[in-house]
Image (cartoon, rainbow, N blue to C red; front, side, top):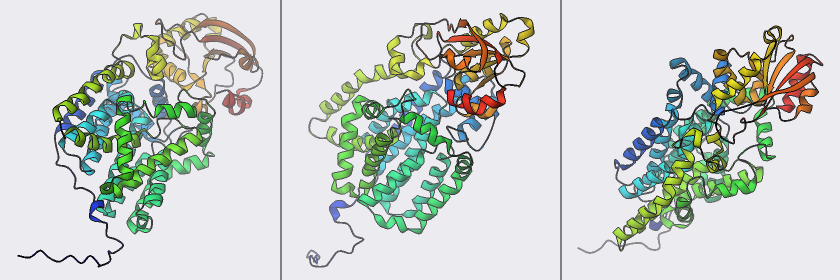
Amino acid sequence: MSEPAIDIDRPRRPTEQPPSATPPEPGAPTRGPWLVAAATSVTLLLLAGRYGYHRDELYFLLCGRHLDWGYVDQGPLVPALARLLDEIAPGNLVVLRTPSALLAGGAVLLVAAIARELGGGRGGQSFAAVLAAISGIVLASGHLLSTTTVDLVVWLGVAWCAVRLLRTGDTRWALPLGLVLGVGMLNKLLPALLAVGLLAGVLIAGPRRLLRDPRVLAAAAIALVLAAPNLIWQAAHGFPQLGVAASISDGDSSYSGRLDAFTLQFLIISPYAVPIWIAGLVAVLRRPAWRSYRAMGWAWVVVLGVVLVAGGKGYYDAPLLLVLAAAGAVVTAAWASRGSAWLRRGLLAVGAVPFLLPSIVLLLPVLPADRLPAFVVDVNYDAGETIGWPAFADSLATVHRGLPESERARAVVLTANYGEAGAVARYGPARGLPRAYSGHNSMLDFGRPPADADVVIAVGWERPDVLNGWFEQCVLAGRVDQRVEVANDENGGPIHVCRGLRRPWAEIWDTEVRRAG
């Protein structure tokens, strides 16, 4: 039989792509990512009870006692979850952290699923899962109840829907994308940054027809409707999250600074993954068969640019780095299957070993808390903030017991940050401590001290001149002793006893305390 004729002169319709630009079909499903995800979640669960509450977890529990549609620095999702888990198992740290461990496993599966959408076979999918499982952003956020853990899965879920939509051209995938995006904005407003990145990516690389597709517009409406309660709360309170973002940009954060944010791009997944995600970025932007996915590569470029210009935290774009790592895993797995396959695969396995142990030691609570090396806290600030909270409360209780009996009845605690207030709420009642108040973030809205509270135990205030502006007398009564050598924000901090308000609390709380907090 003769070969069918090919009409080389027939013009190609605008909707057609050249054969070389046709995206590959998804790879065959495999159990590998599921095993990696299960190992990740189980490991995190086994370590969930180590050390203690993180300052943010203590804050979430306090926010959960004051449920609202929004807070100064977050949405309502995690505080509501914290309250639910604490109602189920009061004071149980493992239960509180179980959702994060499961979400970390979900993040591993989503990265592998993105690799599969890009045509990755069993090896590519499993390699992508391993890259996610050993990544800093997954391990660190998966150990704690954190808005970051939820945000990570939201971004990856949106990215998976976007990749699937771009591969198939089926805009029905925009609807679950909008659903996930809207739920994510009840956690943080950061998914809006992802939406901006995807919008810019489509404008730059196409297909621009998506911007007027009815389903895509419906997805945007779904996201806005779901996010509306938090957005309305923010609007009613003057968008305080913008103020928090501005303070981060000005350097009021442990993870801030444009140079630090740029440097973190090469650390937040793993130094091992850097050449892999760079290869993924190049492939997404230049590989003809992946032309449909170029919007994803440009989305990361735009998001990173916004983070650097605005002075945001360097881990904001980490989920998109995992998307690029998934693409790079497909490229790397294909490279490892050519030529001397066993040698290349061996090099990949051996190369990961020097990075795996440091990640575990630095990001997970595997070392004894009372002998935690200083370099761990230097690298992983959050590790130090999970140590010593019961002893912190003991230090305050010692000062409180030293007050005359007539003063103890009307004394309150004034903390410099929300973590300290959360620690008093968690451990204070068993030690006879009075209620703690603070002007830090949403703590300011949770109530001010009673009008007759003229004896204050002030902890963490490094500037006595601030306290002297509010009280007639302030004396240093002790220092926080967490009974371990850990350089966190509390250990060794001053404890003042202040007496005699110069003005009523109502006059100083919403102005001076807000600024000081």
